[in-house]
Image (cartoon, rainbow, N blue to C red; front, side):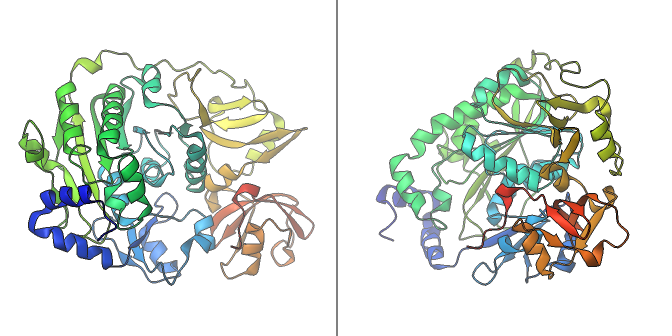
Length: 466
C-alpha cells in the first residue's frame, strides 16, 4: 500500500489494531455502487416492480440498493430523468436516514451540495414544512438546486452562504439540522485515490477547525428539543469524536442519542478524546472492511434547554411580493392543476412566479438561488410553466398529459429537446401545455399544436450522448 501516506497508515494502525490488515485488504475489493429510491415520487415496492436492472438491498437503508456499476448505467435511463432515484455511495446514505425528519419539520442541511442528503431529507418532509439547503460554494449550490428540483422538492430554500451568516435569520428556528461536514476524506481513499493528494495538502487539523466552527454555528439555529446529525467521511478522531466533544463542552445542553443500529456499525472511540466521555460510544463508525460501503462517522444529538435558546424565531414577512389577485394567465393555467393552491402563498418577482412554503423568514441580505417552488414565468400575457413545477407534480395532478413507455424512442428524443410527432396520443385533444411522462412519471412540459409537441424540456437538463 505504498500509495497510502505513512502518517495515515500509522493513524489507522493505532485505530484498528489487529484489524489493520483487513482494512488494507479491502482496497483490493471492487467499489460498491448505490441507488436510493425517491419515496416522494414512488414507493420502494413499486420501484422494484419496474427497475430495469438487478438490485440488492442495502441492509441498513430501507430505500437503498446496490447495483452493478460495471454493467449498468442508471444515470442514462429515463427513470433517472424522472427523479425516481439518486445515485449515492451506500454509506453516504446513512446520515439522512438516521435523522428522524417528519412532515412539517423545519430542516437545515448546512453543507448540502451536491444534494445526496438534502434530497432524502426533502422526501421525508412529504411536501410539508421547510427544507433549507445551503452550500457555501455558489457553483456547487447550482447542482444542489437541480437535484432538489429533479426530486420534486418544492418546499425549499436553496442558499449559498457561510453558515455563521445564517444565524441572525434562523436563530432557534430549525427542528432538525444535518451537518455533513467538509473533512479530510480518509474514508473515501478506497473509492477515489485522488482524495489522498487532497489529504496531504489539507489534513485533519485543517478541517477540524472548520468543523468546530460549523457545528457550533448550527447549534445556535436549532430549537430546544431539536435534533442535529453530524457526519464525516473520515476516520480521524480529531474530526469526529473530538468535534462532538468540543460541541458538548461549548453547549452542554446537547446530549448524544442512540441511533438505529446495524451489525456492521462500530461504536465511537471515547478513549481517543480528552474527556473520555462514555456517551461517545453512541456515535457510529463505518469501516469499509466491516460493511459494503466506504468509511463514515455519525453522531446524533438532541438539544435541551440552555444558553442558545434565548432568541426569538425570526419574523415572517407580510405578503411581500404577493399579488392581491392572481394574473388571469396564471389562473388559466391553474385550471388544469388538480391540486389546491393557496393564492396567499404565490409570490411574483420580476415576472417569475413562486409558491412559497409557510413560515419563511425575511431573507434580505442572504445569497439565495431559490425560494420556494418556481411555478413558471409570465411572458406577454401568457404563462410558461417551469421544469421545477413539472417535477413537483404527479401525473394525476395535471389534467393534460402525454404518457410514453420507457422503451418509446420519443422519450429520449424529448429529453434531447426535439419536437415530437404525437399523432397517436392526441386524438380530440386541445392545444396547450401538456405534462410529458414516462410510464406515469413526469419528465417536463411540452406545448401541443396540432399533432406536434413543441419541446419545453429545460435546456440545461437535456440528455447528453457521451
